[in-house]
Image (cartoon, rainbow, N blue to C red; front, side):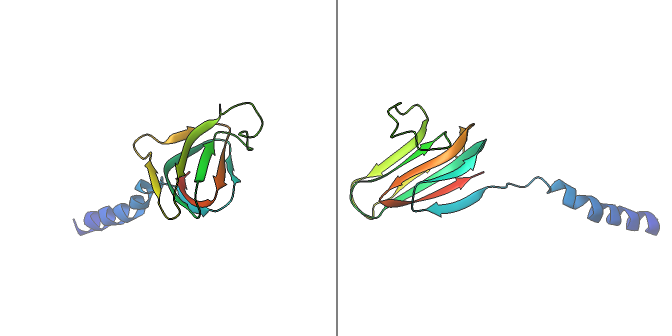
Amino acid sequence: MKKIFLILILLIFIFTPAVYADRNTATVTTYKASALIKTGDAKIYYISFVPTSNSGYFIVLNATSDTTSSGTGFADVKAEGQEATSGNSQFQDFSNKPLEMSTGLYLVISNGYVTLHYE
């Protein structure tokens, strides 16, 4: 009986880490300038924006480059935000239904800081 009990405890310690093997691999990073964040598939869980001067804005694109200045329109835009006054902030929560990107994750920023929680 004692041996069975010890074997069961040993098995619990061996197989417990396997339950936690699939952990969330999300990244939280703050950006100040426009940049290609990730190529391929991506998911955004939340966006936080704080402008550093008047008329700051950000645009999240499903692209690998800035397509907003090409004249093709805003077909790749997944999210955007703007604040009129420096120091105000904007928070967008997509944790219930994440924004999904298939081509890439490109972030356009003007006059502000953007914090992304993505994977």
